Image (cartoon, rainbow, N blue to C red; front, side):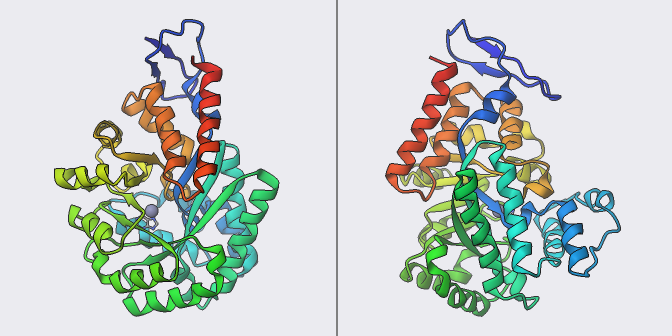
Amino acid sequence: MKQLTTNDQSNCFLRLNTATEHLFMMSLEDFILGLPKAELHVHIEGTFEPELMFEIARRNNLKVKYSSVEELKAAYQFNNLQEFLNIYYSGADVLIEEQDFYDLTWDYLLKIHSQNVLHTEIFFDPQTHSLRAVPFSKVISGIHRALEDGREKLGISSRLILSILRHLSEESAFQTLQEALEYREWITAFGLDSSERGHPPSKFQRVFEKALEEGFLTVAHAGEEGPPEYVWDALNLLHVSRIDHGNRALKDPVLVQELVKRKMPLTVCPLSNLKLKVVRDMTKHPLAEMMEKGMLATINSDDPAYFGGYVNENYLAVASALNLTHEQIVQLAKNSFTASFLEEEEKQEMIEKVEEYDHLFFD
Ligand code: ADE
Ligand code: ZN
């Protein structure tokens, strides 16, 4: 067994279960940084960095609730999901024009390009904006235009997931679905996010049935703060292709078996879980247990501007806290493509890229 040293502050090590003696002194950070990967759970409104927020507020003649970037960042202390959501929705309030949504998305793409993310599947919350009379067309056109540029100029492929705010009504969800139909070509899946407790998937069963009829795939946040029953409902009532988070599924062994049997992907978000106190500290994070049980776990950033890290920082945080092996890190990168909404052939191509990269360093 050999260890890779790191040059980062946390002084974490990647353990190598290989006898490859000539591999020496490569940092964990460098290995993860260069690893080809996909991101499958990121809210575009959650990538809104404070500096850009102030710039967009200024050009729209609006005020951010805090007087400086530093004051805003200092407010990013959360005891639960709802405390975070309150700040997240108020941050999004300054997004008005198509160009704002373009800039937001473009900044995120530049960031992940620097982290070797080759493919991303992005949530957007149209109701957050329609409540402020910002038309659906402006929101989706700005995001879509940036994604097109991302493909052409950065080589990043992408999918868009429309996410329904579960604290709002079924009627509002139906109306949002109706608006989305005009842009069906640009939207791959229909999701469910926002305040989980007290808003079970069953509340949106009929909307999701309609979304499936219209040809969208479905996903849902479930088991982040809510009980395992919400994960069951996401599977059986919303017919999801992925569970977003899913941490609390581990409380129900029969559910775990079912998720394994179905090869149901979980889009896990370690730094989010830490910041929202879903886990007490990173060494208690269930990612390794999920993998040991045979669940198809992936690593994602959720709301990176609020939680202190993009995809690579999430990999680094769990690799360090859970002493993940080199094989586990590579498996997570492969899982990210397996669990994506890419075509089978594209998935294989991406997985081969992971393998080629791995073989550069490990026999
Ligand atoms: N919206 C943005 N981030 C979210 C999260 N972690 N859970 C539920 N809804 C969200
Ligand atoms: Zn999320």
